[in-house]
Length: 469
Ligand code: GLU
Image (cartoon, rainbow, N blue to C red; front, side, top):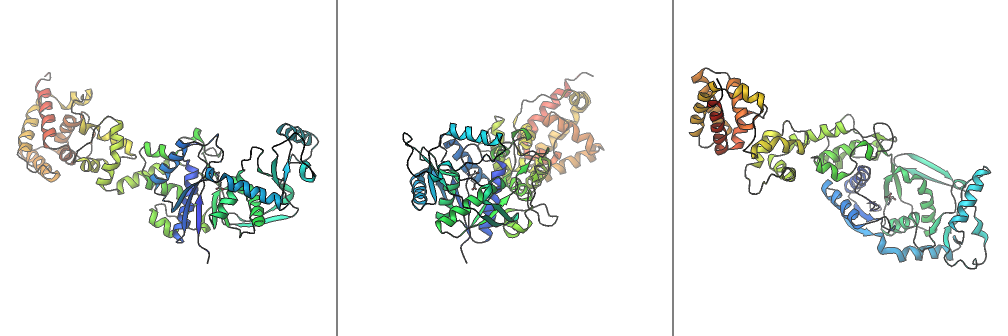
């Protein structure tokens, strides 16, 4: 059996896109579940469009998603010489020829052909040329397409046949001696012994060209799996106008990588009517048999739903760790803070994103908050002052200041004063958060800690005492 080797081969011309991430995920899942290797190759031959920031952004995105590569990153920019050699070798073998046509000439002839209702493909003018064109020192090299057809059995789309009459003699080496995508990809996929090429179906038309180059190389042809594009709600290809398309933008918006992985896996693949998959479950269950042939529509609401699920599932410690960057965005310093897991625990049932969670956590950190006017009028009334005083007395005695202990103190006081919980909890909520909304009051006070709770209750007691009759 040949070893399973897959690769993800992004061009570093921007951030890691949601669509690219899904391609990477499927390549990763397939390699890993088959006990194979997953290779990362940076396709940076287009030096004008490639840049280092994009490389870093792609690596960061992969790492954040947990898509660990076994080999690489390889950089195509380090292999220019090999591509040239292959192109020259094809030329030497008579499988390719030098083309002296200039871009202007090509464009003119293309236009002319279209006007006459002929195919705009390259007219093979230089194919029969016997000598160099005087004065033209930098010919391109074109690969010769011979009559016939190419068939391959796509793992997603099934058998695909393309007649060679639809393919032009394509350029493999440009006049400036840089190689084109179809050549570099074959040199590298063959050289890296890639067994399964998993990529977006925008490359499906390139596949027969690549197969012909494999044949020229006398190399076994890999398996291909072309994934349908991801669409926006309006069925146009997913782009910025549909919302964030960068993987790292989702981290910044407070998404967990588990949620994005789960979402991307289900976008184009299914397993009965199950929706929730951890990476381990995906590794076990993923199969190309259940990858859909048609495009999936990106559904931000479903992603949000999954995110909420993974927030609920996460341990408080993990949430605390993830929350730090979002609190920092709100200028909240969490250095040395020990009760952050506890704080996260009080918020995880409700927050859909970590950003929401950080927003919800603000009151724990900001002591000098303003009371919401309506809430203060209703709950920090003069008559409430003794209630605060009694509660302060009870809470002061608590050690340790746990959720259970706080609940006990509340219960005793409610019994003594014959009060319902709401009558006590709402004023306390306003006292400690400034609003009438907070997580469960006992856990909130416990997470806030004894000192801050008492300070805030005392402040509220004072406000109440000084309130107008
Ligand atoms: N660099 C190409 C891209 O980003 C890779 C295509 C392929 O996987 O063959 O579209």
